[in-house]
Length: 438
Image (tube, rainbow, N blue to C red):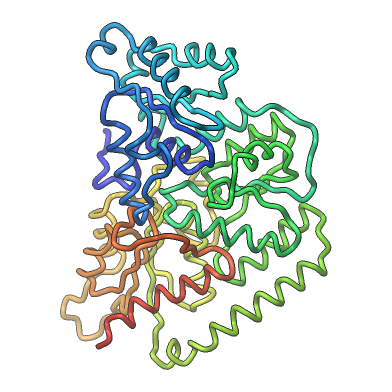
């Protein structure tokens, strides 16, 4: 029996593809699908990712073939060729990516054939197949980057021993991807590593073209970006490291040590950076110790996030803040193989629907029925998406939005990764409590 998804936490593969393309420097999307898809999908990710917005010729301004009933009946290849030609003439870009939608895939347009003719003519262009039946937005991330790195970019045997590529954080659907990538790059740069993040404002198209020369690919997810890294190694010979996103000093220390070992970085350099960053982190953190401890700001915690954030966030709450983990919900729709990849000391529940998660909280932790003695799940802090706000209110729990969709806060360079991210997360968690004081 099929199941429905109540209040989806992602969109289709095309949405994920457009979010990726729209955040890559110098890369222009060309949408080949029915009218309206591009604008609707752009709005959904923009509002759900802390008001990410759009850039040059992205979002609602992305070029689109906008096929109609005529193309659906007679085929849209000619219309696509017309749109590609016009886009190449009018819009400056380093690379153009044609992304398909459901309708053009269903009618069988030869998109790769059309794009191939332009490519043979010297145009910097590539096509990717991203209809909704290929998967959700996270799959769109893998599909686009595979198309660029493993099909468009040429092979090379030249390697920069200090250069790494960062994969695994999905633009928009990981709402803090820019701040997280910035901090990861800052931490790695401190031990002498050059970093391609691809999606932060300091990146250029040269970061994309230099990717095959990297000595290591770091995948900050146990699920997303893994297939991409495997194919990358087959094509370019670049090994990869799958590791969890580090949040706070404990996991960031381990992260830097692990990466340094892969790249043969001097251990003394790493130790000096770790010592410096820990001194700085706890120098700030200890100032809030009185408010945190004397105010008895210890909580039961329930997390509701995607597979990338689930384990790192739970570890931070448990190990750095000393909170008691009650439930940890992973909202991605995952295969059994992907679920197995998430096995750890953190117990996970794979649930997507808002009401189903609310029911699970009640089932796992029943409410007081007037018993004389009762072990109440309180005080409770739900760290999830904006969709969990009502669930938190019903449980008289605190709440912070950290996962998609997040539309009750604005996110610019905020991030929770690394040393600075650990401080930011602490600020935001406790700040939600302090904001209630009058």
